[in-house]
Image (cartoon, rainbow, N blue to C red):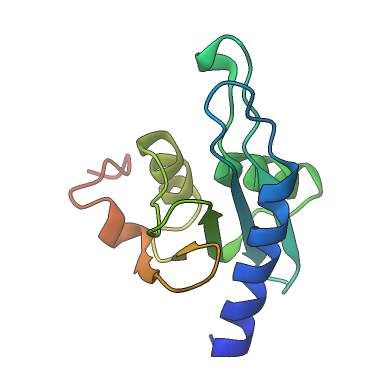
Length: 132
């Protein structure tokens, strides 16, 4: 994947974070997932009063993509307002793993001064894949 496409994913995720609903944490996160077909689908975190009902930006983007008929993913960018890049939570890591362990995960802060790239496999060593 070339740098131009990586930057586009980061930009889309950065923009998506502005739509986050975060009345409790105030922590805005956006995600942009790249489908095998080359489409970019975005999502943001949505908080509810019951924390377990809240959904992260990564899963929002994935569920949105699946509901649009996409099930194969190449990469995902995750952007927050934090000073440093943040990684997907454990729930999101497992979700990403279920779809594509080789998927590139691009984690960035909003101004792109801290960008980290890893595959899902690298984020989830010794992962449960159901094939053991």
